[in-house]
Length: 114
Image 1 (cartoon, rainbow, N blue to C red):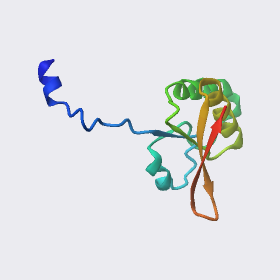
Image 2 (image 1 turned 90 degrees about the horizontal axis):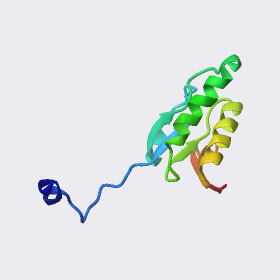
Image 3 (image 1 turned 90 degrees about the vertical axis):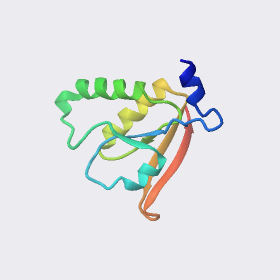
Image 4 (image 1 turned 60 degrees about the vertical axis):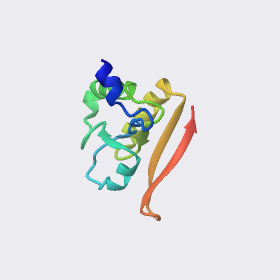
């Protein structure tokens, strides 16, 4: 324990890297979103509506782990985007949303107080 204290660099603490929760990996290139943090895909591909209860549970479990320093990147199916935002709003007082701007060819950040 003393060795741990001696080897830690208290002058330069390691900052926690934010995560970017992408609502759906729908095949788009997400490299530009990586500058905001580590990508975490909530869903992949097509969503089967007969399995919506499973999707809600999965999304809720993942979003529960998110912090207000993280981002929600809206991508793919509108229903999944709305559901993810709703679940985020239930858990957090702010949502840092990333949305693709087609004209700028980059993500825009929107900070939303909930």
